[in-house]
Amino acid sequence: MDETLEARAVAALDPDALAADTAALVREPSVTGDERGALERLAALADARGLPATLLAHDLDALRAAPGHPGEEAPRDELLTLTAVLPGRAGAPRLCLNGHVDVVGPGAEPWSRDPFGGAIADGWVHGRGAVDMKGAVIAALHAMAAVREAGDTGGGAGAEVVLQAVPSEEDGGLGTFAALRADARFDACLIPEPTGFDVVLAHGGALTCTGTVRGTAAHAAFRLEGVSAIDRYVSLHQAMAEHEHAINADVLHPLMRALPLPYPVLVGRIAAGEWSSSVPDELRFEARVGVRVGETVEEARAAFAAALAAADDGAGPPAEIAWSGGQFEPCETPADDPFVALVRDAATPELGGTPPRLAGVPYGADMRLFRRHGIPTVMFGTGGFALAHAVDERVAIADLLTLARTLTRVIVRFGATA
Image (cartoon, rainbow, N blue to C red; front, side, top):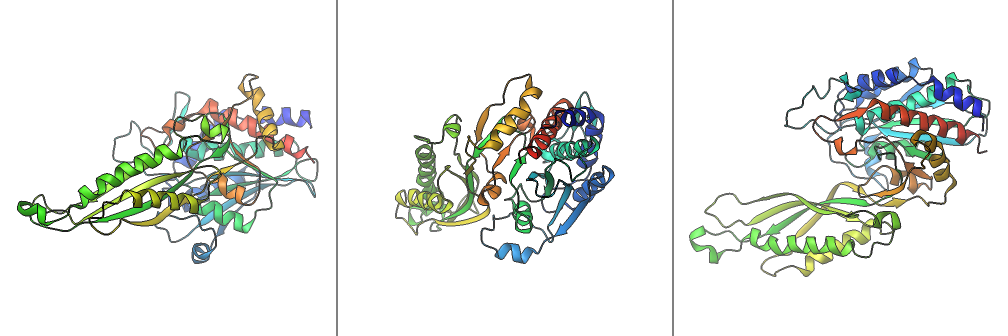
């Protein structure tokens, strides 16, 4: 390891520049399905730091027909990904830093500041996407630029580092799916999602479905002549609660077992009935179903369907289940993989000498798409996850600096592994 190079690169990082570039990216609204402006802005920021950036347009029809299509929910008529490259010596290992630029909408609740204003105040960058995860993408870009400026200009001891900036993470991962179809020749990947500076090695899966429960319409005055779809749904709702309990009993993966609820099951929407004086003949619900680490998506779907079938009251046709939207399988990277140790060692000096905790998380992420290719992958990023998707989202500039310094150390040390 070139300790002199590492020290120079870490010292080159500028928190004010990190904040300014994060704010600039936040000011480009990029709600899932409309990310072009943010990617073009990021390309300009990369080019300005001497890291050539390439925007690639992908064939949506081909992606949707491809095996392993991860699902999607937001309407879109284009899909662009961006790569910025720090060259390495011939034959050096290749490291991917992957992050998404799409964000959820600001919602209806009032914000204290313009959600797309990118305000810098009181040690924070404010705005939608600041913590999830535009600030992290900027931290990765600055880490690469710091290594380049410190003297690793390619052809030396360094790894080749590729920043993948992707859309569509929020609704299934189509951006990373497309980027990896174009280039999956990586020896390792780090995704700087906001993990609170834990090194995340495992995540649960998440499937979304729509269920339809049928009843028989009748006038309320003669409700015994009808069958309420709402009444029929009640036993199914209880069955889903029992299914959640079952899949969270005796959790095998040690990092997932440490979570309060590793594999949530949630009904997020219900719609039924047309009139207070009519027996409702249809109810539709939308649910999110957790998938256990080590379980396939097919097994999880079958178990959920079986739980609903067992609760059917026989008063009408069985509930119809349609799987749609993002389909996240679970994944894990072995704790003894050398890349895990490298990331922990790189982070330790930035965390006061205490090695970061190894963790699992209950949400799906693009990490699983890299694991499909057998690429050792971890997630490691700033604090503030509770602010993601929330009103008044923001990221601490000090956290961005800690992340950028850690990523800089990872880059240098990864280049010294071969």
